[in-house]
Image 1 (cartoon, rainbow, N blue to C red):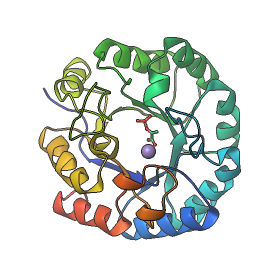
Image 2: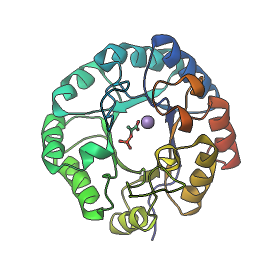
Image 3: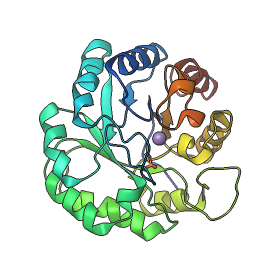
Image 4: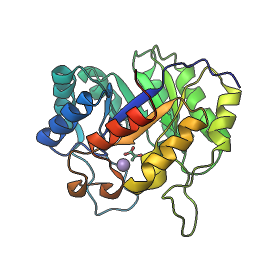
Length: 251
Ligand code: PEP
Ligand code: MN
């Protein structure tokens, strides 16, 4: 397998945008650690109702402010085709498609149609079930929409029945299979949603980089214990910086 991707990609930021202050503080500290692409979810895909569902479109301006203040590229989750227009208008640099959305070819096709010809980078998480063709199919739908930006796949683990040390079990054969099929397609790892616990995130990140994946997509919050979603798995910006240095992901 010969990858055509050279520089590892590092994307980090909170699970959810919660407030202007939380976005700006986290972005400032991550930028100081050398992170260039800042993630934050606006519409949160909660498996069950009754939890924080995200601030929605109200947070778009916080992301734009973080970009302007700290020179970061920004990425947020596009949850359905109806919201594509507002993210395009707001000038976000990139969007990711969540695991639940990537599971449904009808949703993927609607999103592909809504993004047709745009210049965004589009990152596509693996579907919740370990079905490699469904993941590749989601990638192909976006490719066929003639996106001008980059397309990137994200391995975030799979849902399995029963107790496991991981929240979403990695199946490394699947991202490696994807890289065999498509050496031109960057495949990064989301160690946060695989691990589910902050202390395991660095181990998963090390494994992903050792296996030749193309970068990391990490959850990081300025005050993880106070996070409104995924509190247990978020690293502090300083911990992200340590990981970047340890793995020599930057010069
Ligand atoms: C996220 O990245 O915050 C998220 C909800 O991810 P996933 O779609 O992988 O569950
Ligand atoms: Mn999350």
